[in-house]
Image (cartoon, rainbow, N blue to C red; front, top):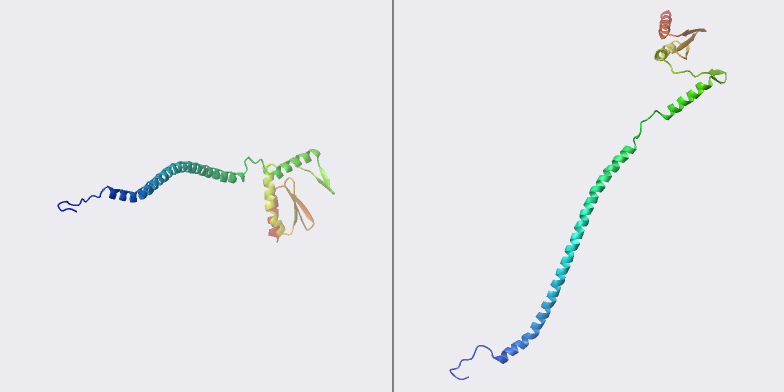
Length: 189
């Protein structure tokens, strides 16, 4: 190199070509990688938009399921109510079936008249009046006293008490008469 001339710091054309030739394969590889990355990013973008649609679909399905849950809860409460009410009668009771059948049988028997059972004649009579029912109830309350006095007794319809003591029989139509009779017997003993 001549004196006075300084060496240029920039490489010459051949040196640039040499650097360029060495860097060119790396640049081509980087360009290809960049292209692949762009394709991947584009694919990711399309997949993300597809995922957005799928998420929206799942959200609508979940919303419909929550609506169904509300509907099912309502139906379950309705079912429990129906099960509870199914055990109750849904109509007014007219009386027990046995009572209805007995009433019909009594009406049919009354129309036929008296009938016999062995040597006994059985007559079916009408319902008792209130006074007769009260007399019968009063006679029934005196039965324990008759049992304690060792008397045989019987209650006949409509309201008549028959008693036997020591072979002597008596009939009472009024419970008060029987009560005074029993008090007289207790006074004698």
